[in-house]
Amino acid sequence: MNSLFQAASDIQQTMKSRKWLFCFIGGLAVMRWGEIRMTQDIDLCLLCGFGNEEGFIKALVKQYKSRTEDPLTFAMTNRVLLLIFLFPDCLLRKK
Image 1 (cartoon, helix red, strand yellow):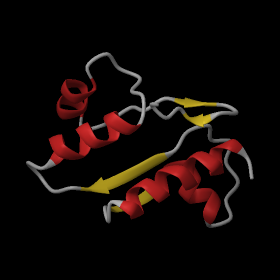
Image 2 (cartoon, helix red, strand yellow):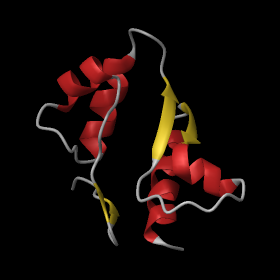
Image 3 (cartoon, helix red, strand yellow):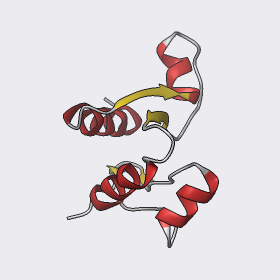
Image 4 (cartoon, one colour):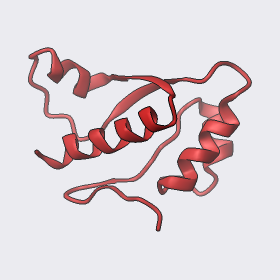
């Protein structure tokens, strides 16, 4: 399994263990349906409802490293949470 799919599997495990509703979108989802893409990231949509985002963001940032200095403010402003993805180490988990 390549590192992209390992990282996707890891984040999928996280989402399922928390019983969070989500779906993969973007290049990874397109590859699943047979359209080869040279994607190097994982995009997903997390269904958290309006007004509930902060708890989800804090939980993910507690488990994974963020690409931004202030992930909560960035995510709440831009409606996207950027997590670090490194080849070949997959998502860099916090210890």
